[in-house]
Length: 243
Image (cartoon, rainbow, N blue to C red):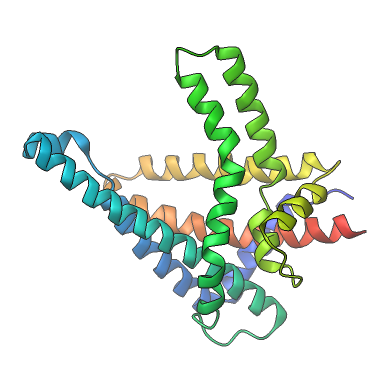
């Protein structure tokens, strides 16, 4: 049975409309984090022009620490939104921060999972960028990295949403098994989430005049929609995998 992606997109939009207060709250939190991340990214050229080399280095390190901190906060609130969507779907949602403790407990494991699934792809990029290495080897590692990432792209949702509460290793194993012989739908999912939505974000960001104001807004809105869409896709993909 094929997955109807258009229906999933429509279902995701309907969820956002039907739960407008929760959606607004989620968007507001993600927007604040997006703004802080956007303005805390070190601008190397400006900092070097405004300060001596040693001072510029300390300024960049300070900004990077802020960026990293809010990167963790962004991941934490992404987890919180996912858990809240699950609570809404199951009919026991109370308030936005009801799963804060559970989200905090899962944060480190989720970060580790993100690192694991991104590592081969990042290594491939690094090898291709390094002129001292063979581009063929880098390309092969990159292709494997893409395949590895796609196969495990739902691992965070499996870790957060499965009632069995498996550890990192077991979740990776189950997520790999879930995508066995079912690469096409999960590849299309990644294509939509990471490519099409990425293009949409760049297009909307470049279409407006005041990109410094609008870019974080676009990023937060798309980020929230992706979370809802990914949740709906995982539900359908998981159900079909059980059959």
